[in-house]
Length: 236
Ligand SMILES: Nc1ncnc2c1ncn2[C@@H]1O[C@H](COP(=O)(O)OP(=O)(O)O)[C@@H](O)[C@H]1O
Ligand SMILES: [Mg+2]
Image (cartoon, rainbow, N blue to C red; front, side, top):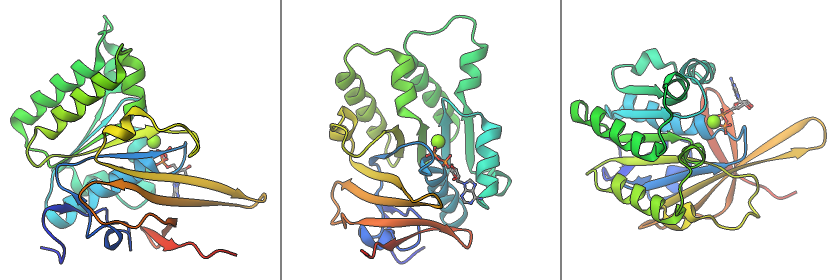
């Protein structure tokens, strides 16, 4: 066991967990929000991978847009090969299912729920990633978004001990707060900024984390020495 409260899920991003009382409360629905290429998928998998390796926890990663192969290539390139944890982490490619299904179901949220119910009947998962909730919403064509999301989040919370990470594609920080953000228990916000022609800097903020005293600063996010890490931003 680690030094932190066992009722929290560590992010395994170096220096981040101590900024939120050791991690994210178990059972929370946490959004991982940001624009393209801000490491949303990679960080979600980072949580699953390191908790599988260190804490023997099981994770289910449901992808609605990127193929299983393409995701695995990305995770391999970041030094987190799926072979290491294939007995603990399941990656499901629903995009493939979407292409092969003859009739397109109207309510993908329903299909998703039934799928998770079936899979949970045989394996108890501790962590779930939905990549992305934005795609799930679009293909589901829901009429009342706030109500559907409320029901979906409540359904996820009803599984004892399941912590959910929902990926959100969000173009800019200045966007109006979305329904998801009011309903979620936590928000990890990722962004990037171009510096001249040569460099892109990446940032991470803990925007919201219920039941947690957390830091709200912007941290620089780096992938260095095979690990994701945050450092304080030093203003120039
Ligand atoms: N080996 C690597 N080391 C560091 N960064 C990498 C590596 N391979 C890919 N990347 C970065 O990862 C980014 C994609 O990460 P990803 O998690 O798929 O982002 P998102 O899900 O937010 O779109 C790429 O744009 C690239 O900058
Ligand atoms: Mg992604």
